[in-house]
Image 1: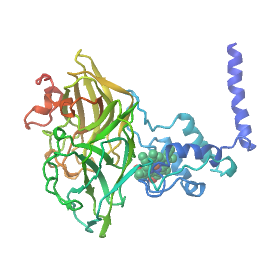
Image 2 (image 1 turned 90 degrees about the vertical axis):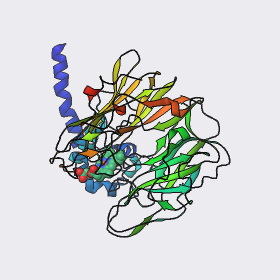
Image 3 (image 1 turned 60 degrees about the horizontal axis):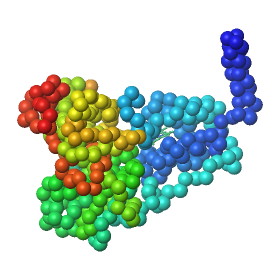
Image 4 (image 1 turned 90 degrees about the horizontal axis):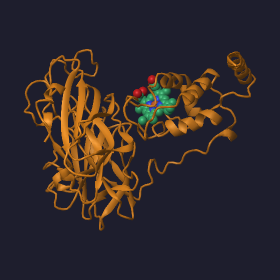
Length: 447
Ligand code: HEC
């Protein structure tokens, strides 16, 4: 029996090679490669999206064949940073080994086109959207960018004119000019909120005018980051709530590109006719407003914490956020039972602000401590480091740092979003020594 198996193993390989060499099994673009590109690459690799070149057609993809082999072989593409040891994610972008093998075999075989009749139907994109929006809201006026220099964050109030409550199941923020919008958010400002209270609709302001706060119901409705894509809030029948009479605030971080230009960003929404079973809410999660990173430190640890203050909360999504010195990020839960679990761990790369959707939302019973552990490289060997000689603190610009994690939470409709998380543990320590670090966790019992 053993002998037979060995024989089988060595006979089959030449057979496959033979078939490939006489053309029958040749891996072709239309038959084998195009379906993989559609499923895994074209979301970004098409005109108007974040990637520099299109991979929609054979003519588009052929010149990139060698680069594709390298990019998928090294797992540089598709971008994905979650350590596979922790958590399972519905939007896991990693290619299967079989797909990698197919792409490599195609390139090694001379990247042939094959028969166009074998091609899958081309994907359809509605005016560039990755969702099919029911409502599209645009900035009322273009924002004018100067050619050079730093541009402060801009805030634009946009009237919502919603005559009914909305339950939003998906959103996509799209820049009018993808070259200049580094990242953006669209906030919901429900009636009664003081956020941007005295703002003239459509005008761009370089400060937010009154802090947006969860206690006033402000929620992030849509986000734009390189690689983030559209956001779905429908996780087994959940949606975001936009009360009637709400307005929107576009928060925009622009980068000058050496010539004057303009941008009109927009938000697309998919709405549900029925109220959902549960609410989806985006919170900033554990936040290290008190962080201190010492000059030159190549592995500075920063720890922050929130405690869950309501029943029935589940974690659906995590998007770690750091700036140019960010190296890696871990999200850890300590349950009321004392049990500890790493929910997410991964490298951090400032070029990519990826979000991770849990394959199964994680229950966070009341009293659970959610802890973020991040590391920064403030040494001269970090080529992105704006200034290794500087002691770094929390702040909005790229040369400042942040350590927080946007988290998508699901909870019952009658739960007040303000009750869901309370800053706790290391996040309550006064700003002082470098950190706060894990060693300070012990000093600060849960709420
Ligand atoms: C989330 C968006 C995204 C997805 C998905 C994606 N790419 Fe990319 N890709 C980019 C961006 C942006 C760049 C340019 C920046 C860079 O090289 O990091 C890029 C660069 C590349 C390059 C050039 C690499 C180099 O070293 O210059 C290749 C080749 C490539 N992608 C192939 C692929 C293939 C094949 C897939 C699918 C299997 C894929 N990409 C999926 C966004 C994406």
